[in-house]
Length: 335
Image (cartoon, rainbow, N blue to C red; front, side, top):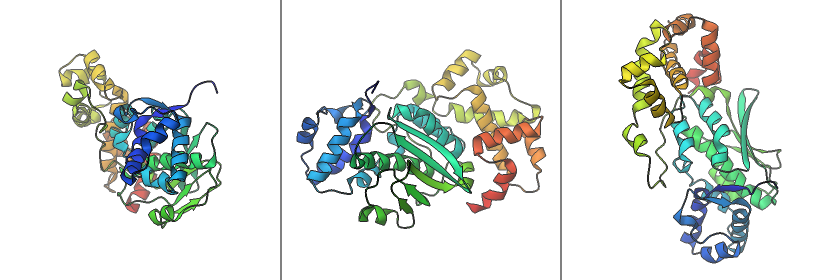
């Protein structure tokens, strides 16, 4: 192993809170597994992964809590994720881009976890894997958390009661009663090549229903973010009025905002978004509104959001929505 696998301490908090409510000997077991006793004082600290997995497996066995993995993992909120990832999720105009952000930035949460997603017929499977050797019990702890993060992100774009069609696990431990009760209409499959969550491909184009807050564990949020929290959203709204005149370049945007180009770029960087990305997101959001009107041709939608070439518009729309404008129109009545 070239590097020590680590994860953000915040991911262990739901387990510790649940165990403490039961009166489990948390502090003694933390000491035995060589985890710091001050772990709950700094949620942003990185902790060694393997001792943490050993802690969870040992205490769940000694306390007879076979369903600890899901009971704790379902308490983890997307608001608890690393703030750069939250920022990307906040400004993702579609579920497709939100899942891409998770794939790109997961190492901020856990250096040993990898996410990716691929089409399976009319569905999408969001896969994850833990790239360190561990026993099946420890793997199940990691896999429930990996899958619940995906489910939480999807629920920001779908109704909160949404449940996946299938949830897969690489670990071959039998599904317990609590897991089955929490996902009664979901196929729970063990012994797979990786962990995964299945959702309809048509969901990729969904726009956010809720926005994520800054990390609830954050003690000192950046003042610039706090003061300019609506800056990207307000700039996107303004730029949409300029689309029919063509692509609004960054010099126009800086004049509109009343700041220099460099200051504009610096403000956007606080939200982990570039100017070109912000424009593409604004074009997508405007296009979605226009596509809801069946009387407007897709060609005219392309021109209305600043594209001279409709094929470029279709490619850009697919990059964000995961489907073409034509497919989006056909699918939108499903949700």
